[in-house]
Image: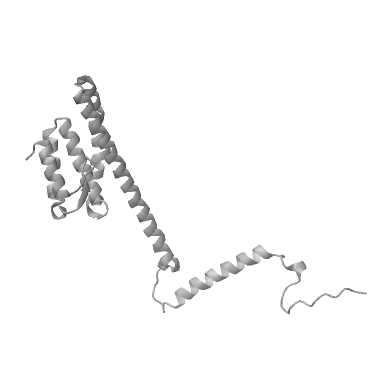
Length: 202
């Protein structure tokens, strides 16, 4: 007696042929769908040129904003790291001065000055640091740290120029909270006042 097999729904391919040419057919179907989308976008323009279909999709804007966010986070990380380096340099120099190690101080200054010019100055001189609101506190903190370190290296002219930059570039932002090089959170106005007292530039 023959075993009974239920009939297949009409229109469905036989299991034997279900995978015949599957990947190729799917590729053709996807290509046809993309062509239809692109042609439809062009036909809807009534003869007027339109932007490419994919350039107007929200997903593209989301990706671009995410990349901008990653770049901003990387900039913040770099500025925090350099601020910590400057605090470490200041403590090292303070210890060398306390123990009167003149040769050690000279060697350290030969290292610290190029570090400031190569790593700190490019960050605090870039327009992006002052224009982006989220980077302004980090910019000000690096200038405060730089002024303290220059003071420890007896660079009076450099200290004065750095204070002038803080007062001119951040004139409308003196109520902004910053981290003073000693680790205390203060307003920028208070930070500049502390800096003037600490460096004698009153």
